[in-house]
Length: 537
Image 1 (tube, rainbow, N blue to C red):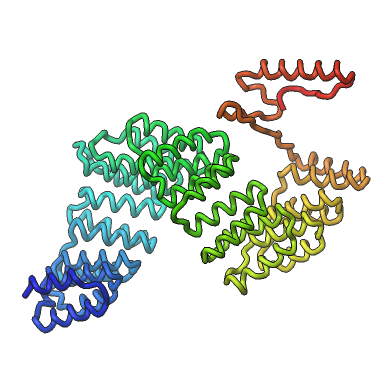
Image 2 (image 1 turned 90 degrees about the vertical axis):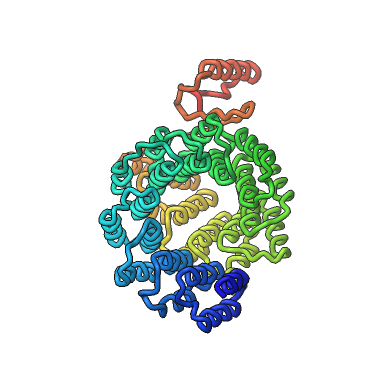
């Protein structure tokens, strides 16, 4: 009979099957058996019916339940995002006079993480000490994850340090990985890298890869892409094979750096093809973004065209890439293809679409899409969409309409919005609107020298020299320093960055000598001084 019920539970694929199995359990008095009850809960959980399993579990007499039945129920509720109910079940274990084991604590601590209930987590930590399980590998890992998820990284490190890792075993690596990931969670990849350097070398390559990937992601997320790439190179030197998650992390770093690391991005593309990952949609999307931000839109389009499966992110990424490169018409054509493919756009898609309209100067089409967002697509415009529309109006010379839209939007205007108004005022020589924008910008970002320079240019272009001088004087009086200009040039797949007044480039003398010779040749040819310079600009 038990074997028959076990077979029946394995065959369940919907609610009706589960109800049939439950009825059979009740009729045959097998609903109180711990093994079958646990299996029933697992079946319900796999079908997304954890609430049904909980209702059955709740009516089962407590004295009939075993610890592993409680564990199965807590796990099922945690997996279906019912963390509060999971902790209630954990609490009832005491009433049933059952002792939590090394599986109970990690499941309960996972629920604590979901609820960010630090006080409950510290209570469970105390219980692990009382039961003598505070040195169990799985419990320690769960405690570290709980404390780091609640931003208590010092408490997580104390748990890690208190555990005496005398032996080097694969299980120990799990604790090291938890601590490394914890540092990344709180935005501290430096300490994560320090721990990774000291992690014992084991045969658990997968666990080591998780740690390397965490550190790479940590540096990328904290806007230190050069560090992320350096860690990736070290990982490869140690012969750790990168998986798709590691490649996503390093591609993101390459995208942040743009053309400065296009060669590495191309190598990763080749590595992806070699490993047979070239049809993984997230990697394809990351490649499109990397090529786009590196200035190679043709390669980005090639990756997109070769995709056999495309998601909303794929379409949005390529539309954004085309708009980013000023190819507004192609971006809008791509949006039309997306609609034909019956892919519903989201709010990020419309940022790209409105940006494309701005690049092409299609004001009426931009107005149409902006107005159609709520009633046709069910998307309420956010501040970024207002910013795109205000930028589009400003560039087209509709400054009064742009300022009126600023006053109507249900958000407090940020520096980017007033900055686009100021820039448009400079283009169209509207000193009055420019002055209004600057007054707001001074409050939002008083140390941005570019704002004062733009207003000074607006006044100068309209012949109001006294006001132009006053804007410059205002900048000096407030102690605002002009930021140095910079640029970079790509030569033989290597990016060379130059900052105004900087002489640190290793070939500075050669470059300056070449510029001097060019200047002399131009003087001789035209008898006028064309290039004047002091240092590399």
